[in-house]
Length: 264
Image (spheres, rainbow, N blue to C red):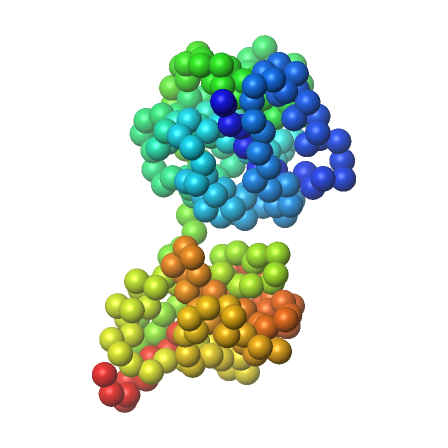
């Protein structure tokens, strides 16, 4: 059974998601269509990359992932791509999402031929769905277009350690208002070396001095930090949204200062 996933910023109020599912099932009834998310913030390919990057590895090999982002707006005027990566297929506009997900690729990239397409307002319906069905039926990647050797490059700065502190920032805010950072457990452990520390959020008015074992340690409006299932520091507040209570957004600074005088 072929599996096709959908990740979009369309929401579920409008008919677009149902339209895409209807086309897929009409042309290939044996397909299984899975919604990863339709609640990506509009045009936010950085948010979409986080959701899809942390979701796709759990799907079976040869799953086909359709990305419906910036369908009617393409500042680079590039054709949509199909990428074969780790035995998964990814279809979408080259907004920078692919370089964020995979880094630099030199193989497995095909630029889909849309030279005969008169209207580019609904690339997902008119191009990507057809490509997905082609692959689901056992079609070859190279039948979709010409090979390409590069991607539109977008870079998210990594957290960095210097002068007895780690500097990172908020990379994602989930539905509960939890703040996911780009500070990994590996970097934290390497930089800490047994020292006491303070996690500073935006201003010195909000800080945390311990790492909790799980979200369950948050009670009432207590602010806690813990390592999430992806291995990054996450900030939460019991029974409330940390992003709202702390007035934090994507890209806001997170700093961890280590006590240079503490015993190791």
